[in-house]
Amino acid sequence: RKKLTSGQVVTVYVWNDTVANLSLMALGSSAPEIFLSLIDLFRKGMHSSELGSATIVGSASFNLLVIVSVCIMCIPLGETRHIEQYSVFVVTGVFSLFAYLWLAFILVVRSPDVVEVWEAVATLLYLPVLIGVSYLADIGKLDCGARFFLGFEAREAE
Image 1 (cartoon, helix red, strand yellow):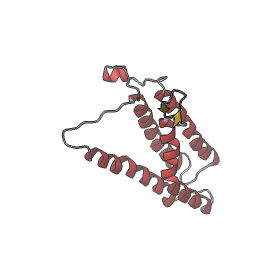
Image 2: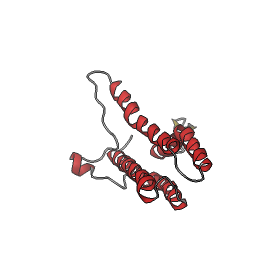
Image 3: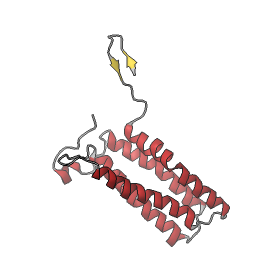
């Protein structure tokens, strides 16, 4: 919070909300699974095992299915909610699907049960790409078809 010379108090955001959610909150909530997977990966000589990938996929599936379901069920009867930033929602959904397909590709098709260095580097580089594209969607530089699919202008967060 910052107090202006006029006496008005304003909130100054250090992080964009979308960037903070996709980086700080996601990494913070997934840190145990990520470190467990990394430890297992190095112990197995860069070979994947059921523990590493299953831990991350299981955690992501739980977050996607159970937590979202509970949040939906907690909406009081008769009330509704809407997606305020359709473009960010679409970008996140597309990247989520891509992440599952990419994981299946590198662990089953490309090099079964072996994580090669280039696969690890490529996977790591997808995070800044996701954050950058989501930021562009958040600030209105990407509308992801909101006008076409929903028939109105994409709503911006207030």
